[in-house]
Image (cartoon, rainbow, N blue to C red; front, side, top):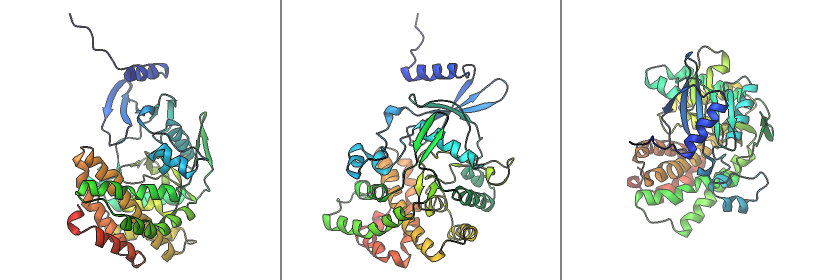
Length: 368
C-alpha cells in the first residue's frame, strides 16, 4: 500500500499561511509566470470571489541594498544591491501598493502577508492585461493614453524617502549612477557570450564607460519622481468599470525607486515584448509633455533617448542574452525588436559617439 506523496516544506508553509489567514477553504489555481523567482496562484472561493496568492521565497534572491551602503558595499553584496532591486520583497510590494492606492491608483489591496515567509494574498484585478487586449484586437491608443495619464498622476506628488504601510517599511531609494551603470554594463558581460564574440578589450570597455557616463549622470540628476520601474503592457490591466486613472491596474511595482521622469515612459513606449510604433511613441510623448508644460521638451527628449538606449542595452544583456544562456531560448524572439529600439535611440545626433561605438564593435550579424 503506497503512502500519500510528501509535500515540500515550502508547500506546507504556504498551506499553513493560507489556513491561518482565513483562506484554507479555497481552490488553488497555478498561474503562468516569467523568469522571476516569484510564482502566483489564483485562489477561488465557493462564492465565486477570487484572490491572487504571491509566493516569493526569500532564499532565492540575493541581498537588497541597505539605504546607507557605499558603492563598494553594494557591489560586494551582489546585483540586487548594486542595481537597487527589491529582490521580490513582500515589504516592498505591500508598502508600494499602499502608496499607489493612496493616490487613487489601482494597485492591489493586500488581504494577508508574511514578510519573513515571502507570502501575500492580494486583490484579484483580473486578466485584462494591456498586451492581451491589444493582441485580441482592442484599440491600443486609448489604453496607452490612460497609461500616460497614470504617469502624470504618479509623478504629481513628491515621493517620500520611506514607504510605510501595514506594519512594514521600505526605503524608496534613488536610481543612481551606480545602479544605471551596473545594469547597462551587463551588455558587455552577457552579449559576447551569447553572440559568440570575444570579450571586449580594455580600450573598448573604457570608451564604453566614458560615453555612457553623462547618460548615467543625467539619470541620477533627474531622479525626482516615483517610478514603477517595470511599466509596460504586460504589467498594466484595463479596469473599465473604474474611473479616470483608476482604470489602469498596476502590477509588479515592488522594484520602485525615485528616478528620472522618462524612466517609466521609455519602458511603456519601447516595450521589449511588443512593437510600439514610432508614431504611437511620438503621440504619447506629446500627450505626456502637453500635461507637463514645465518640462523643457528638447532636453527631455534627448535624455529620454539616452536613457532608453541604456535600458535597451540592459535588456539585451541582463535579461535576454543571460536568460538564453541559461537555457530559455524563448527570449531570443524579443532580441530583434530591442535592437530596433536601440538603433532608433542611437539615431539621435547627441548619441552619435555611442552609435559609432556600436557600429565598430557590433556588426549587423552580431545583432540578433
